[in-house]
Image 1 (cartoon, rainbow, N blue to C red):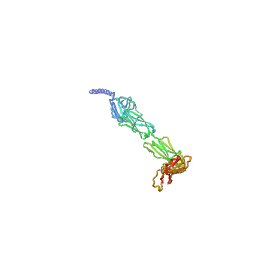
Image 2 (cartoon, one colour):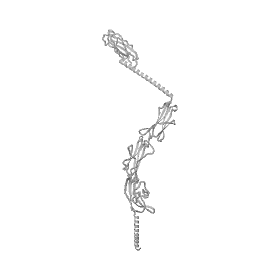
Image 3 (cartoon, rainbow, N blue to C red):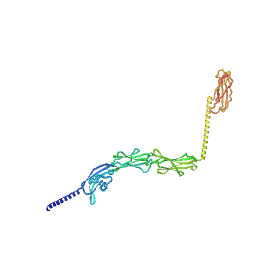
Image 4 (tube, helix red, strand yellow):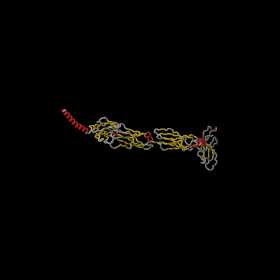
Length: 499
């Protein structure tokens, strides 16, 4: 029995040696500070993609969890904890006590920043930071958002100038270009601003332009174009200028047939509403301030986008409607009413008959006057022709040589004697004094007939002719022809063949 005592004693010494040793080693492990290895140091990723943050825990410290933060502030909500995390954050090895790496998907510009992996320990029922990684700087390369054009809320009449704004945000880096186009033609912007001024995880651009609206802009387009180094092709936003344009109508009121109209005729009063935009118009009629129901024709659209329509009112031209006032009321695009008027003037039936009779009488008088004028013209032409013919027949108004047509048979074979001349003396009264009647003097070779006439009218065209036809005068011996009489007498020289 005593031989076993040394064995029992030796086992007791072994237990006493190993227990303190194990206790000392355990306390050493529990007191060691853990180390976090976080990679990579920097990371660049495009928006919409995903990235991974590595966090490996070495050593073991006091019990406590591990969290991920974006930025150094530990008071902000963590993007990942072992109990809760963002839907876009996923842990790579969920059950690992040392690997706390995470993946963030569908990256956004606001995801840019410095990420930290932090180990906590429990103290007095609360968790405090025990250690943390050095951090990973993540930069997000973000493309600009689709441009947005801001326009006036109400329509503007043609001829006015309008300011438009274009915005785009959440892009990085900061450099960006904004271009304005109107129907593919560049427009210089008023100003373009990129905010913020300094470094930021993302930026916003704001640009404005001024456009003068015209009537033809109903179909025009305004384009805001964005260019950025993250884009393969420019981003474009289109805006129809017709959305803010208003072209007021031109209004005309017509009466067919034109006034004055005959009694009891059918009359059409038409309101022409022309060249308006947009196609939002209402037409109403008043006859002497009393409403009238009408049916409008469908609007007709023109090439430039404007429209026109006609609204007609058919009435009978009764006596009661004489001097009636028809008013066309037009309201366009919720604007104040615009009106145009026309007055109906009616011609009575009796006035119509009198007017017709007067018209027929006037026509008859016109025909008669035309015929009389034509006859007068013919008469005047005939008179002028006769005067000219007579004037050509006797060119010398005072002296005419006549040849005797009939001669006696005894004298037919005789040679004509140049001294055998018969004179007809034509005396005209040219002064108040009276001259004695002249007698016919007969010589051997010449015969004279002295004829005294009354004073002719003072007209250069008057011609006096002495027609001595077949006058047989006695012959006297040949003698010289007498000298002309005084200025009070005029002569007609007549040559007669010798008898």
